Image 1 (spheres, helix red, strand yellow):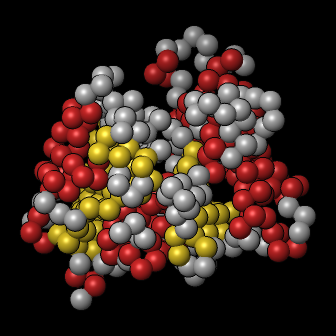
Image 2 (tube, rainbow, N blue to C red; image 1 turned 90 degrees about the vertical axis):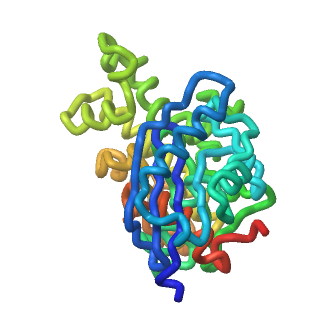
Image 3 (spheres, rainbow, N blue to C red; image 1 turned 180 degrees about the vertical axis):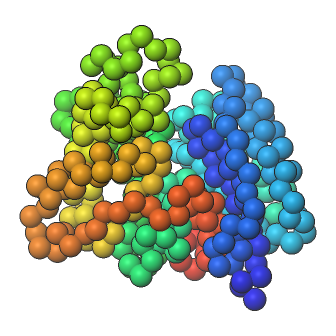
Amino acid sequence: MQEQQLVLAIDIGGTKLAVGVVDGEGRVLESRRAPNPNPPTDDGEQLLRALLALIEELTTDRAELSGVGIGCGGPMRWPVGEVSPLNIPSWRDFPLRARLAEELKLPARIHNDAVCVAIAEHWRGAGVGADNVLGMVVSTGVGGGLILGGRLIDGASGNAGHIGHAIVHEHEPVCRCGAIGCLEAIASGPNLAAWAFRQGWRTGFPVDQRTGRDLVEDARRGDPTAVAALNRAGRALGIGIASATTLCDLDVVAIGGGISQAGPLLFDPLEASLRERVGLDFARSVRVVPAGLGQESGLVGAAALIIHPERYWSGD
């Protein structure tokens, strides 16, 4: 029976590694998290070994698992699963899907980590009951995944829904992807912190105390520069979401990731910017909400690649 199916789920981000066991109803039965060591070398094996060591901490018998679902930052060659995450320089064209299938002796499926968040929010989170959902992650990067007509949309290369590299400003800033004016270049945690620093925020602090998380904490305490940075990010997000909503006729946009924890400091300017830019009646009904599954969303979505391929997997 489906509810007895157990899947190993893996969620790899720029700053964290997470692994867990998820059942057929989308419940995370156990999980482990660790900082991403992200070694500044060309040796991708070191990071893989750290991931495998974290998996070994799980207590579920490997023989009970039906497969492994993987969410990883992009870009990647999909569905073969050769990954080159912008935030993980030690992996370039790294054959993650094949290596994990080989090491774990399990069928493996992989998608972008933000796509997995979108899947999770559609299946078990804030998008339940909606057929047209954009799931977003606003964290170390800005990513997204797109559900239309109740099914995941992959696009020509598996990168459909990648709203972080939608253009929201004509002239600046330059993004690490090489384009100008990407949403990620404005709204991601590191870029938010860098912009605030240039405006005078935490100028006497070391780099490791000038993160996106620090920015959110200072904004909550009323620091005017931190508040201005989140306002700038929220307005950029509103512009990107307005375009996506009009293009895709969305019901729900669910936003997760560390920067989304700023709450109204981010969502209020986002909502104001969005409403300024949606004019057509059908687009005005879109709801923008915080992701409902929190830190578990990446694991739940990765598991769904194995559990519900009829909706979320077209790579084989």
